[in-house]
Length: 543
Image 1 (tube, one colour):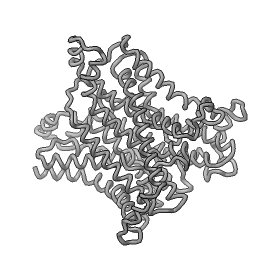
Image 2 (cartoon, rainbow, N blue to C red; image 1 turned 45 degrees about the vertical axis):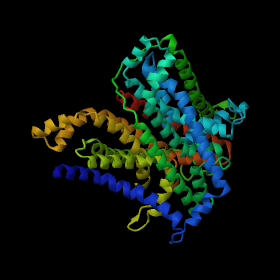
Image 3 (cartoon, rainbow, N blue to C red; image 1 turned 90 degrees about the vertical axis):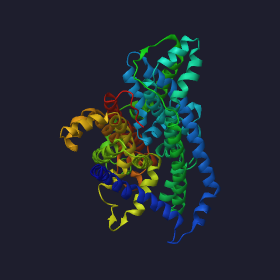
Image 4 (cartoon, rainbow, N blue to C red; image 1 turned 60 degrees about the vertical axis):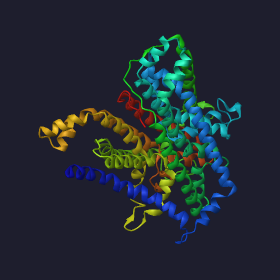
């Protein structure tokens, strides 16, 4: 028993040290900067910031836009989840992968795409939505609807159909069956998806900054503006404390809601489309158009120069833009992004595998089960804490010995790995938890050591999720903007950084380059996600 606990403790030690040094310490530093502004405890500064009229407006807009984005994502995502996971039709797998792509598109790219679609001269410019809260909500729904489809769809796919069939046999209509039989069993998945989407909407950075500017700020963008433009560090720290409190409360509430209804599941085979499936099929087709329109506007806009078709915007990516808008050419920034993503991926996988192994080993006592639950929740925190808060915290806490890492080349990959870590863990944990522990015990009784047991029992079922987790981490790293905007050195910008800088510089050439760079970045992340979907494990969600 002692040897077993020592082994698990050793496995947990590395991820705990990483999380403590590069997440807990930076976030705690943010809290300390708010409550101890001059080295002495002074909560009055935090209260003064939180009671400002602008802070209240920002908080109100954050909650409103997150609620609207969540409602839109759930309303559009539920019918699509049903159509894509419970029915069979040609190209179903490709369409499912295509609808997943928006989630991993860089948020800056999403913002650029909607500006191109809704802005003056855009295909839908006549609607007058550019620069309005509606444009922000449309961008949030575009980005997050894939979360609902994947999480709820995976749960729906695995539900035992016999209860629904029994209710239908007794004369219940399809609507009655859905309301009384299906919906209660789907509730944990819906709550889980909605809570994650709400967190993503509330901490959306690139979309709000690109589409809302300073007029429609959220807590996330306000932290950025207070830090970068106004140098009001105590104010930014106070807002980070507020955001952290809200996120922790929401994670706890979502965890409780997810686990209140036990559900018996058994994988089922999708059936052919019927006439009764018309409504979800129509909604899915409309959703495909909704996802395709901004992307098409982005691609077409990147190919237009002076009202003619041209590849000049793509050729200009080898330059630094009009009037030296960038410190390095866009092509060099792309190489920086790829190198950073490779480092972030192996870091996220290393820590993610250790966390998943520790979290899925069978608990032999109530205390051990509680410790595992605590660790699982601890490693999910980066999912809810904003990347801006993390980046800002790393910047102000790792600036003195022995941890003066501001110029270390692994600092940006570390921050990006922490952002991707919850996704990697959520991909690996369900698969490892599904391995019968008796197989490991049998291997051990035959003389296999822990490494040989891992290689012969766990690895054969884990290699696909490992590759999928690597794809998620790589795609998330390519598009990460919040933390990177604080940490990236001037001479080593990443693609999202240069795209945002090009948008901030006047000139048609700079704007055209921003569109072309966005297309290149979107194509790279889309290719990764299509590969990830090929490795998808049936009935396993991503969060």
